[in-house]
Structure formats: structure tokens, C-alpha cells
Length: 622
Image 1 (cartoon, rainbow, N blue to C red):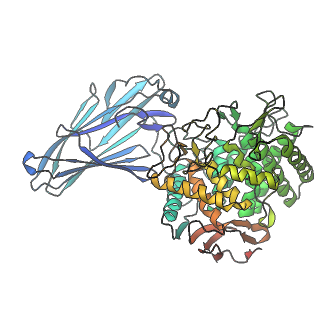
Image 2: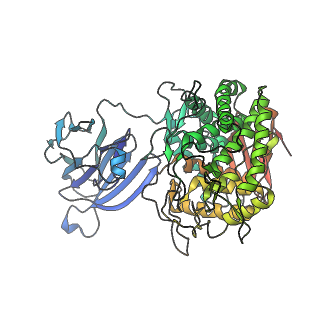
Image 3: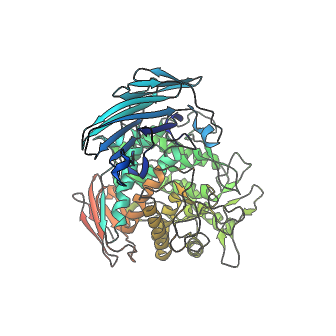
């Protein structure tokens, strides 16, 4: 770590260490490899020649293992034929800058250090941080930020120095996902395509690494949105990721729902029933949107689908009042109108918001009926009115057959730009008996949308662009203006496959799988939407979280989509709708969870699915 750019150890939104440079015998080791070993450990390897007469072969290997909990272990391995006594220096520094300042490039200079305990300490008006070393250094120079050792290495021997960095008063971190109480099943995959098992394994590993416990209720866990920028709870992202991870069990969904239910607004105001969330950028053609609206609509949908996957009736009943408040907020906010409008921008009507609201209404109605509550009929009636109006008001005709508008302005004019937000129109949700809910588009409109999503304008060859390549404002690195967002690509693959557009779904699937291979199967939150060419590789986005909850969960959704698993645990059935074209050849998914029990399925090269393991009494639907 040199202290440049984004480098550093972060804790609670603050960079607690920005520089950690190692010199051995007065020289920096020659770097030969750097890689992510696991989701929470990076390994760096360098070499040294201790004798000029030794020829070109290095005789000392310097291995640095850096852990997400704020620990770094520096190990020297000697291959020299004689004992070595090597001086080792570690130069440390930090600015204690917060993420906002670092992201905007306005972080300040390094702070002066002081000698503290067996290491160094830094202080500023907003906090303190320290680095302790084991074994203690033989010398510490605060003015230079240096720790020094003299290490004796016998022939073939090794010596290590361990550094621990943390803010003052903070205890050691413990990875929730490593504990026996992890809510995620340890599923695995096999098949003709060797990238498949690697993607599922790494996706689950990333999800495990991002698990956090609720401080007030340690039994409940949720996913951090991603490292390094969003290491806390982002309600909409947490709900999306928990929904895509349902094939790994319902424990994560239940914990996330309970945590967010405790944040829900109460009382009689306009916000009553809403789950709070920050605003986020919506691209060059729309103002920022409220993620609280998205989270409020995702809550009842996730509860309804988690129940289908096997959430216990007791847990569903406990969470039902919070879901009812979300649905009441939806109906109250819509009022006598047809659309759920944006309150912050004079009545802007977003396509994406209508898709979330429509799904929430239908799945929420299904949930209310199943639990013996009233209100389902009114929600279905409104959803029907929304479908009728949407198919007329949001469809923009053109020479290519038309497209859905990304929004309607307050004066009713459509905002016609082709955006990945349209994939939410294909994500309708799961009802009873393995049936998908009806969508906002009719059959002809859905076909046109599928063709657009599969065209080179949207399909970059590495996944789905956030904005069409021919649209004004297109930027291959734009957050929502052209970069490939893995979450939207996964939803597009699942939605297209469910609607029967397997060619388009398969193309996007192969693209994102190739991108995953280029990223070591650890998919970032997003990457550049530059067109794929022969021999090219996807360009990383400099501000992307990696790992990220939604991209890790997307790996689970992408692979389980191939088997088309549609459970109805309350009815004791599971239906399989595999991708018949079998774009990745034969694939086996083992150790998933349906109805609270292990579930394994295999899809042949002919696109035929067979259940290999399931809960007792679970029947195969038709």
C-alpha cells in the first residue's frame, strides 16, 4: 500500500491505514504476484537476492497476507544455503480520511505518528488509529513512521511479523459467515463448463464475507452492500441480494426483513410504513431516486417469495404486519392515481418504480390471501388498472417496433431513452404453484423488449449496459449511463429465460460468465460497458465495490436460472422450468435449500432437469 488513490484499510467509513511499505535489507522486494486468495484475504509475493554472487535466482521470498479484519502477516522464507540476518523496515502512514473525501480526491496529507505500545498511533479531531506489531519492533521512529526488526533466518527457515490495525477502542472483527450459524447453505456446482463451479463457490464465499450481525439483535444477519465504499446496511441492496440468494436458504431473507422492519416509519404521516433509504444517481436523463421507495416495495415481495422457498409460517406471521404497512403505504401514496409517482420531482413516474410496485401488489396480495388477511383484492384491482394504463402510456412507438419509456415527465411526456431499468419489467416475481406473476407489458411488447436487450446496443458482450450505446449521454464507465451492472444483467437473464427468450438470455449469460472469469470469478458491482472484441477483456470500474452483495448474489441467480427452480413450499411442490437450450451444457447444483431441506438438481445437455435430492414429501409440480 503506497497511500495513493483508494489504497488502504477501512473501518466504519474511515481509512485507518493508507500506507504500508516493506523494505528488506534496504530494498523493496520485486513484486511477482498479487491476487485475492479468498473474499477476505489478499496475497502478495515478492522476491529478493541477498547476494550479488548468487546469480539470477532469488533466495528470499517475501509473502504478505492481508486480511479484511485489519491484519497483515509479513513472512520471509529463505532458500539461502547460509544463515541470514536481514533488517526489515515497515513504513506506515494514514490520513484518517473518510470515504467521501477519498472518493472525491480531497483527502488530506498524512498525519504525524507517535510511538504507542508495540507500534504507532495517529490522531486527528475525528478519530484515532493505531498499528501494533508482533513481535514488537526493535526500533520505532515516529517522525518517519517506521518500524524496524532484525530477523534471523536459518537455511530454509521462515520468520514472520504480524501487524494489526484498528481504530482506537475498536475490538477485533469476526467474520459472521465463518461461524456455524451462517444463514447461507454451502451449495456447490459441477458441469461441463468449468467456470460454473468456480462462480458459485466464489459467489457464496463473497456473500459469507459480507455478512454482518445486527448490533442490537445478533441472531439477525444482513449483507453489507460492498467493499470498500458501502460496508454498512443499504436497505434496497440488502433486500435484492437476499432475494437472489433464496436458493441458499431463507435465513438471510428472514434476518434482513426483521432488521429492516425495525427501521420502518410508524405514525400517521405520509412516510408511515416506509423503509428509509438514501437517494442514488439515476443516470444522465433522470434525477436521483429514493432507494427507500424501492426497499419498501421489495419488502413484501421478498417475504412472499421467501415463504414459497420455505420460510416457516411462524416467521412469516411475525413479519406480516411490517409487510402490510408497506402495502398500505403503497395504496395510500398512489391514492386515486394509477401510478406511483416520485414525490421529490413534481410527479415524475419512473418505469422501474412501477415494475417494483406492480410486483409488490401482486405478490403482496398473494401473501395476504395465504395468511388469511384482507386487502388482496384491492391490490389486484389496482395492479390490473396499472397494467392497462402502462401498456398504453409507457410504450414509445418507433421504426424498430417500439420500446418502454424509462419514465414519464410530470407533464406526461415520455422519457424515451433505452435503459437497463427496463429489465425490471421482466422480473415479475413468483406466485403459487411455480407460476410467475403477470407482467406490465403484453406479449408483443415483451418480445420487442427482449430483442432490444439482446441487441449490440444493450448487450456489450460482457453483459447488459445500463444505457443503450446509441443514447445521448452514454458513457461506458457511467454508473447508470452505460456500465455493465451485474445485478441488472442477472435479472435480465432470469426474466428473459422465464419469458421464453432463451437466445437473448444465453448471450447475456455467456457474456457475464466470461467477465467473471476475467475477474477471477469475483464479480465486481459493475464494470465498463465497452464492446467486447476478439482477445479483449472487461475494463474494471475504478469506483466499483468488489466484492459486492448484489453481484455475488447474482452469481447464485444466474446459475439457478438454468434449472428454473420454482418452489411452493406451503403447497409441498417444486416446479422445474430449465433453460431448454442448455447454454452451458450439463450442470449439477447440489446443496441448495428448498422447504428447509437440501435440494439438488441436474440439467442435462438436452435441457432436461431431474431432482436428485429434496425434502421428504416435496412433490414435483407440472
